[in-house]
Length: 158
Image (cartoon, rainbow, N blue to C red; front, top):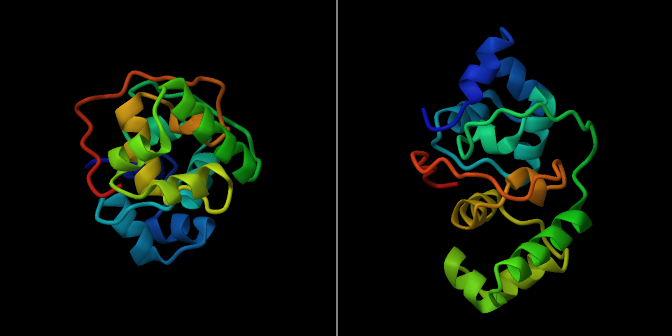
């Protein structure tokens, strides 16, 4: 199992269909996420982490340090855009270089940083894996910017 969703769910004695209902997706979609056959969209990553009151980095096995995060707030897209811009500037790369890192275009990166579109979950996970930045920090859930990426985690198709 690539992510910890099943463990988190079963530790709360919940069935897949119960979590799916809470998150607002079909049971089959949730099952695909739990079995790592489908990428989890950014808004749903946020919602799952809020429900479990846990850091996304741990939930996706990017970090083995489990942190309790209880925010109960909505995803602030403007804050996410600002954090993405800060991340790129911190690592001193251009939009073009970041786009190449994510196998996309500069205009897509620009749209993320200018809050025209929310960063896709697959791009978010890949960016954080490659830079050791915390997904939770990017999404405004934590003040901890950097994490020690669990190199044993191979999160395919995220």
